[in-house]
Length: 291
Image (cartoon, rainbow, N blue to C red; front, side):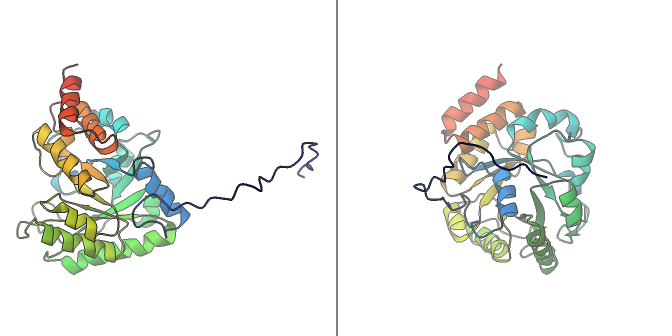
């Protein structure tokens, strides 16, 4: 039985201080339930409103990608510098230590390898398993304009329905095939469709006139790093994307294939969270690389 409150201290209800009810910091996310917002606040830094995600889920269709032959060796040193880890459940269970406190965005679609038609993906992870692994979001590839466009859209909407039931955000990834033009018109089309159909976050590519893409998308956009670029060019892309409305970056090859991956992810963090310019970030990269 609980003890009665016998304290002689006079109660203070702070009647002169109204209770605050502040809007959630993330674009387009204020109407979500508490659990959904809490997961999003693990992915995006509430102070900067941005995220540096480290993508190393490439093996789900590429196999042992260059730089990811041994995830336990190449990725572990980078984990302390990432806000979120984008990976598969196989790597999460087999390689990532449970003591890691980073948020996790888990790849939840898959099927074909690089040897087949990539758009023929299906849902590859049950939502209950995602919850069992305590992830912060699930990610699904959507091939707007691809051969299996409707199927991949349906994959996403099914995950959105399940996610709403359990408070799990869905990150929709706009896939770009060989036959699709990577320009603002297409990226705006794909990003808007994903947001309209319920994605809480959209991952897409940085293109010229990117401010049009972010303006037309009602939820946060993070940019994909794409193919390996020289370090200064990758930092410039990150700077331009943030300046034009992106809420973060989800980089993989431009970090783990860098000559100095730890220095590179540190430089990316400076661009995204500290608002530093490319010159200063690149100088930081070179300085850390040479230590």
